[in-house]
Image (cartoon, rainbow, N blue to C red):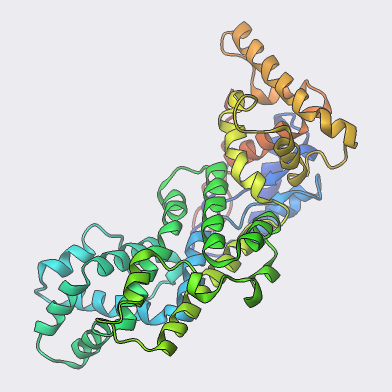
Length: 413
């Protein structure tokens, strides 16, 4: 679903679209009680909540993934602004010089070459890739930038830029952020340029959270955080010693290069605290965007189950992981312990049946049709496929004036 980001849809139109979605799902004879996950790419939380409310009538434990769109940008903003606003300000000032100066040298041109458009009036969360690219390019061409701004005629704006560029703390910030922002890139690029693929977004989210967790928390605490994502584990006593927080090799070398870098102990300590605060704030933002019941096991493995179910048994997905995924998705919570233990065998039996039906029918039956003929032991895979189907069904093209829309649906058979 896409909505004009500058227009807030009216409630009646949203209600109409939500009812249309439910009716379309019912036309496929899909038991909505099996619907475990809902995803909708809409910039207005109030809109997605209306859809979630309509679907939760059929399954009160429905998991909403509507917080995923834009999560990388929000994490970028949450990490940068509290501790590294000066970096954002410097990027904005240099971009302003680049945009208004009739002649700039090749080094500055290369910094802004092949980058996304930038509008300083827009929220930082909407310009995540631009910030990542410019911070990394500036870190790589720091000396050239210093020499360029030293060569310019003195003005108030040029003096301000030059002073920041010649400050060792500023260079240290850029070296750190060129490292710390990189893990955000893959998720942001997927959401900004890739096709809608919820499973891939979940897997990239898991990788991002794992990277930041390992950079900030003690190993034993990091393991607990990945499993439960409890924000209380981000308290100071759970963190790595400041000297062990992952700031990247270039920043670490520069930080302790005492012969060339004029930084006192207090400045070093303040920087390390800011680096830790970046990871902590970004992690809090990421956790807020992911349903608390969806643990790291589900985040990492949903993509594999959906895309390569035939490779599961002999390779990477154990019986324990399959059962834990079903539990996190709420697909098997009503089953007895004995029935849950039988789920993996039943799952592999379904895969075999589907493959035989496909070979027999010259293309096979639709996944949804085949699975609905199976027993309740198939709930896990049904739930995963329902989430995939709904993400396809909610491809609503919305006009700027209203949310009145048509639903287009497709099922991969």
